[in-house]
Image (cartoon, rainbow, N blue to C red):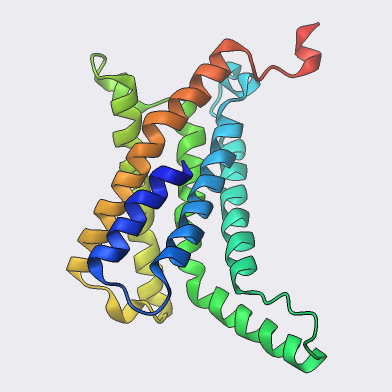
Length: 215
């Protein structure tokens, strides 16, 4: 998950000549967030107990999204926080305010890992695309569907950026939307082709059975 996201994102940042933050540092952070949120979604999606439920476990999907959001928060905060123990209390408070401002400005991006985790958890139980087109390859269908889900999350994130007037909102254009949509789709396609299939097979094989279910 991490390597696939890293390669696609790093190539995108290098080709577009993104200024400011180092492409390597930026790619590492985003790839870590995507890998962590994908893991959260697959852990819930691989539950046999949820697979056996007749009703749709929306609450568990929401939990997957919350875990994905926490992954974004923890990774982003750790990348911003300075662990220098020689700082005075005033300097630490200044850094805390700076980190808080940065997090609030980047908050719309937290929608993407939340949507990714929820999408994986939900698609592990039911993929409407492969259900409608019976002859479609399962891995291909999972990749396409998760790609569409993440692109939808991206559009919501960009609308929130615009509404909040964040620093990124000034650079939003049709070209930016198209480029980011393509990158998100490719990353989600790679994750969907592998993670969703594994989570679904684990849930159906019973490997995620709780100990009390064995009696």
